[in-house]
Image (tube, rainbow, N blue to C red):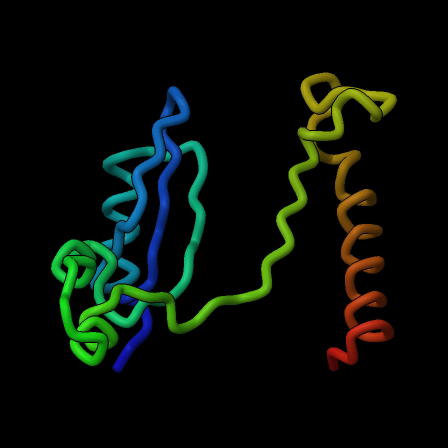
Amino acid sequence: KTFFPRREFCFTLDGDIFVRYQSFKDGADLANAIRLKCPSKIDIGPVYNVDPRKRAAYTSSVSSSVDSNLRAFQATERELVFDIDMDDYNDVLNFTLDEHGWTRCWDLMAAAIRVLDRGLREDFGFE
C-alpha cells in the first residue's frame, strides 16, 4: 500500500488561509493542485491510516473501544523535520533579504545544516 494517497498536504494561500488534510493520488495530481491554487507555502504532513480527505468518516464517536480503534483517524508515519526560515532572522542579520536576496543566506543555511548534522550524530546517535 502506497503512502502518497494517505499523506497530508497543507497549503497556505494568500491571506494566511490554511487548507489542511489534502491528499493526492500521485505526484501529477499534487502538481495540478499546486498550479491551480498557487500556495505561498506547502507543508508536508504525516501519513495517516486512511486518506486524510476522508477523515470525517473515521472520527465519528463509536461506543465500543474495539470499534473506535478500528475507525480512529490517526497518523501512522511521521518524519523528523527541522524548518529553518531565514526570513525570521531579518532583525538580527546585517542585511535584509530584499536588499541582497537569498544568495548571502546560503552560507548561513550550510552552517545550520552542519550544526544539526553534528548534533544528531554526536548527541543522538544518528548515522
